[in-house]
Image (cartoon, rainbow, N blue to C red; front, side):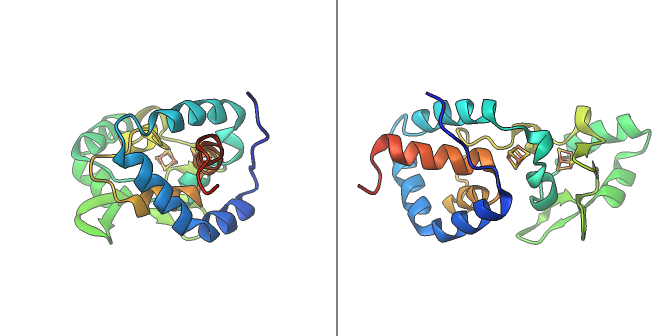
Length: 172
Ligand code: SF4
Ligand code: SF4
């Protein structure tokens, strides 16, 4: 069933923040059940078909994707640089976990690889980028608060969570 999806990023940010406690409770409930995430996955896949990521690019403006050594090696091969040069030029320490590296961002335009709404490193982007929004596959132990941050950032996550809440009768 096709439902109208909300794509206005300002509204999604406001509503996502407004609903953060509800959404944390909802995610906890889903995550605590075997197969709990499956309905969310199905709905997210359907929502994703209705949303044009090229018209959005909000994750590339606002998220801080982690960059692994393997990601750096791939980027280095692509750009004809050493992995060390990629590390220094395109990544910085993650404030939340200083041993990890995340992509550098520019103050006004997000990820260092973002040009307009296009990724200039698309074919070799970090795995965290190609996996996003992986609503159905949160990393093992991923804090619920992180999933809820995506709810106020990504139209796919926001709409999928709202439709899944409705489908499962959450909050009634
Ligand atoms: S590397 Fe590409 S896909 Fe990943 S955040 Fe940057 S612009 Fe977006
Ligand atoms: S994954 Fe979500 S935030 Fe990123 S471009 Fe697509 S809809 Fe926008």
